[in-house]
Amino acid sequence: MRYILREQELSSVLPVQNDFLVTCTSRYVHLISDKIDISQRKLIKNADMSEATELIKLIKQKQLSKVIGLGSGKAIDVTKFATAQTKTYFVAIPTCLSTNCIFTDKSTLFTEGEKNNSQIESPKRDYLRLEYYFTE
Figure 1 (cartoon, helix red, strand yellow):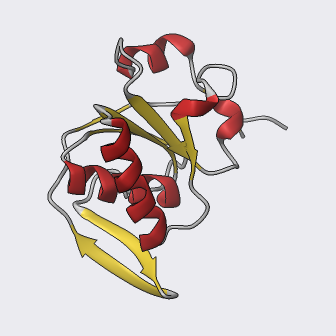
Figure 2 (figure 1 turned 90 degrees about the vertical axis):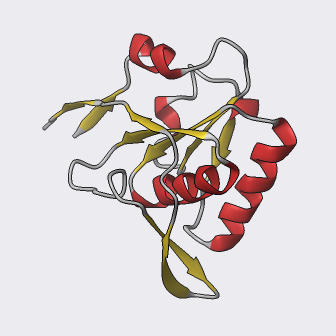
């Protein structure tokens, strides 16, 4: 399967100012590498509390108005948690057709190797769909 993120759809959720950030795992960075400057990207390696804490600090430091989570569970859960904590606008771009993490008010993060489901206050959010192409 191949994913296509259309430029006009991505542009529709990006603020005019450069006060936004896109989070994703290395698996999906190719979808945005030619569309978004490297300073506006944050790679998520693990769905753990240290990543979420780092993202919270970054949101506050850069005074971001919007954070876009691109991917499936890892990137979206970390981003959803961080944006809920900072009251920052959240946009989810799910890359997995079966994920439900974008619709819940829970965020699953690991702390010292243990899985924790955190109930969060739902951030203000939008969703953006990807086009999926099945390839041989």
